[in-house]
Each structure stands twice: as C-alpha cells, then as structure tokens.
Length: 367
Image 1: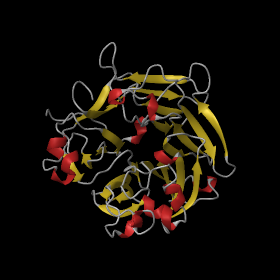
Image 2: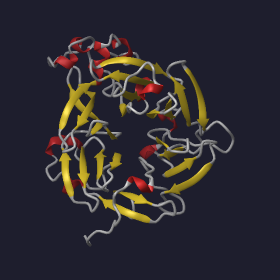
Image 3: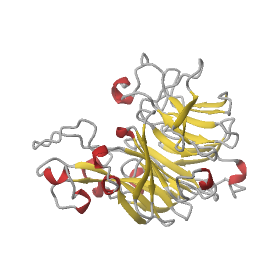
Image 4: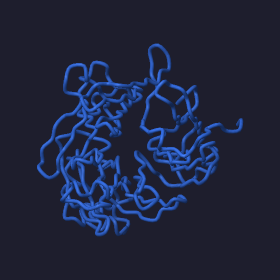
C-alpha cells in the first residue's frame, strides 16, 4: 500500500520512484465468482504476495489466494490467471514461472490425489487445502500442476504429512491447512555443480507447518531430500552458489501475534537468517544472532541474496526492507511509514541491478 493505493514500486536507493504500478483487483478480475466467498469485498481487501520484474520492465505478481497478473511497464494488462495462487513467484529457467497454487478438496470424494490414508477414511469431513506446485507458461497458462500432498505420499513420506497432532477423527475436527506451502525455487544450471546430491532443474519447496524444506525431482515428482529444522515456521529458502541453502527463519509461532496480524511488541525479536549445507547437515546463523541484529517476522518474510554475498531482507510486519553485506552490516534500509506511529506491511523486496533492465525510458503516458 502506497499513498492509499495497493501496488508495487521500483525505486532507487535514495527513495526516488522509477516506476509505479497501482493495482485494482476489481479491474483485473471483474468477475470474481470463481473465488466464491473468498472474493475480496473491496480493492483494499487484497494482499500482494510474490512478484518478479522482466528485463523489459513488465511485471508479474500474485493477488494472494486470488490469481496472478502480468502488466506492462506502464500498467496495461497482458494476461491474468484465474487461480488461487499465493506466497511466491519465481522464474523457471526454461521459461515461465513457478508459483504455489491451492485448491479446496473434500476427503472421500474419490479424487485420485486423496486416494491414500487418512483421506480415504475421512468421509464427511470438511474441506481442506491441497497446496499445488504450478508451472505457468510465459503467456499465463498452467502447464504443470502437482499436489504436494500426493508427492510426499508417493515418496513414502505420508507420515510427515499427518505428524502435527491434528485430530483425524470421524467428526472432521482437523486442520484445513495441513502443510502451508510458501515457496517454490528451481536449482539453476549455473549452481547445480555445487549441489552433488541434486540436479539442475530440481525444485525446492518450503512447508511452514512442517518446519520443513524439501527438494523434489521434477522428472519423477519424488522427494530427493528433506530437512525439518533447525528453522521454525521458515520462509523463502534460496539456493546459494557455494552449495548451501539460505532460509528466512521466522523462529517463532503465531502466539506472538496480536489482532490484524500485528506482532506483540513485547515478543522476543528472534528471527534470523540461516545457511544450511545439505551435504553435511551443518548450519550457521548469518544474521540475527549478534547484538544490534534483532528483528522479528512472526509470519512471512523474504530474503534476496545479493552479488556481494549479503542479503536484501524483508521484515514483513515492520514494513521494513534492509540490505546487509557479507559481514552482516546494514548498508541500506527502507521503512514504509504510514505516520509517525504506524508502518504499512511489505510482503517482498527484491534487488535489481541497474544493468538488469533493457529499459532506458521509464516514463509512461498519463493515466
């Protein structure tokens, strides 16, 4: 939200706005019947979560659990995808995008993706969320769709999917959001040699409710590797060129949240950034452990590894984006202030080098 308008911005480090994309859900999805009761009441009752910029300045972004939109650099709609997408949006190396999707399913309805316990035993239970790995084409079509629950079951890991203490009982008293997929990332060919246990094109996902990060072979759709912890309620794992994985470690639970997802100012500021070596099982905290590094994102949060070995970090509820160098020193900070006392949340910040864009003139006709 900027100046009372939901949107996205490209800005320089000094705060100068290079490009601005105010967005309107009602204009992008004038017929929101496909969302049923979850359709937003107004254009301010939306959440933008996941976005990437192309070299030509065009933009692709998610309305959280609503759909995905591609805009030109001047805001014209190129395409829309009517599907509940959410949390992250990343380029696929072969073209297109990886985006988490979601559908609501009813146990016992004969869906082949639910043809395994406990779902075959749950006749009459309420709907639950089946998180999906979606591959989207350059022109906004779903070209691949895989159920995360089914992938884990087919990989012999069904016990992991039901290991949270939910009450799988005949009366249907159980959680509807069983895994909470919040990231899909592809291992690029340029980094593959650094990960001897993986292959170029493998897919890394993060499941918040399981404290779990996994790597999946997209040829067989089986789990190659997974790790539970040392992170807690983590977000946004990233492959690094040294063969490690960086993780935004929220390191806390929703008990630290007040109403409207505001965090309790008396809660301990314990979030951190971790790197993990899947070959050795070792990890280290690269930021958030030393005095002066304290920060907190009870939910959400992002990292964007930088060229100098540092990170651009999104501290969601604090409305803050800040960059650290490879020594953990803060070298840039932006706070999305509402007034002297309040900030507006930021779901994601990304760093784009100036030489990334082919655009020389960002000016657009008056809207």
